[in-house]
Length: 361
Ligand SMILES: NC(=O)c1ccc[n+]([C@@H]2O[C@H](COP(=O)([O-])OP(=O)(O)OC[C@H]3O[C@@H](n4cnc5c(N)ncnc54)[C@H](O)[C@@H]3O)[C@@H](O)[C@H]2O)c1
Image 1 (tube, rainbow, N blue to C red):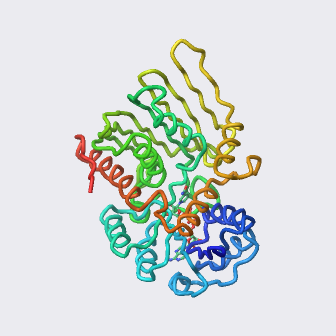
Image 2: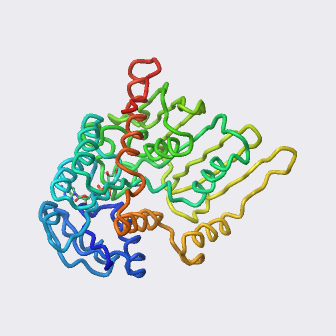
Image 3: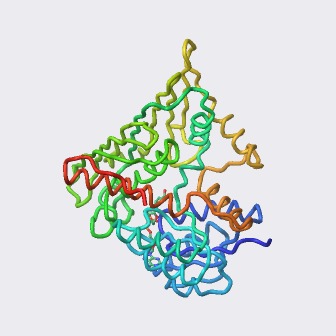
C-alpha cells in the first residue's frame, strides 16, 4: 500500500508534536501530511515548516474532510470543537485519529462514541502514554505475573498550568469550564485514567475531591481513590501547578511479591524517565531506561538508536499499520469512553461527596 495521506484539523500547540511524528513517518514512507485546516494560516505554516510542506490548506475543516487526497483525518482542535469535526468524519467514512479528551462533557463523549460505533469508521484516540516503553514494560510485568498479582498503586500526575496566564504564548481555553469541560483531571489526567484501565482493568468505583487553587472555573487539583473490577485499588493525585517546565507522572505499583516505581514525562528519553523493580530479598534493580528503550524499539522492528522523542510517532505508526492491516487500532473509542467514564464518576463523586460508580456501558 502507498503512504497513508493525512489531514490535520487544528494546527496549534500539540499539532506540532503530531507533525514531528509525521515527519519521521514520512521518512519511513508510511504516511504523508497532505492537508491541514485552521482558521489561523500561521498555524498551518508552522506545521508545514515541520513536515516539509502541506499541499492543501483550508480555513475550514469541512473542506479538508471532503478533500479526495485525504485518506484519514486527524482532529487536533480545542476540545469543544471535536464533536463537529468528528461527526463529519463519521459521515465521510474516513479513518479518524482524534485527540483526547473527546469532548468537554460526558453526554457529548457518549454521542461521539455512539456515532463512531454506528458508522463503523476506524478510530484511534490520542492516549499516547500506552506507547511509552516504560509503561509497556510495566504492563508486560503485570501480564507475566512474575511479581504476583498487583495489589494497589499510587499515581501522581503533575504539569505546569497550561494556560496563557501562566505560560506566555499559550492559549487559555483550558482554564475555562465552558470551553474545556474540566481541568487537571479531564484535560490532563484522562491520560492516566486510560493508563490505569489498561494496566489494571476497568475501574468500577471512585471517591474524589477537587480544588481550584488558582481560582479558574476548572479544578487544578484532584485526588481520587479508585477501585478496579480486578480488585486492585489505588490513588490518583493530579495537579496543574505554577512550576513552568515541570511535567511528570510517577506511578508506584505494589504486587504480592514485588514493587515497581516508574517516572515518565511527555517525551520518551526525558531526564525524568526511570524504572525501579524491587523483588523479595534482593537489592532494588534500577533499570537502564536507555537500553529498555532500545530493546522496545528493536522488538517493533525499529532502529534502536533512532531519536524519537515524540511518542505520537508510535501512536501514528500504529494507526497507519492498523489501517493497512484492516484491524482496530488501539486505543479505541471505547477505551476513550471508559477513561471518560472514570473522569465523569470522579467529578460526580467530588460534587456529591460520596463514592460514584463508573459507567460500564
Ligand atoms: N495527547 C496529548 O498529550 C495532548 C496534549 C495537548 C493537547 N491535547 C489535545 O489536543 C487538542 C488541541 O490542543 P492544543 O494544545 O494544540 O490547542 P491550541 O489552542 O494550542 O491549538 C488549537 C488550534 O486549533 C485551531 N482551531 C480552533 N478552532 C478550529 C476549527 N474549528 N477548525 C480548525 N482549527 C481550529 C486554533 O486556531 C489553533 O491553532 C485539545 O483537545 C487538547 O486537549 C492532547
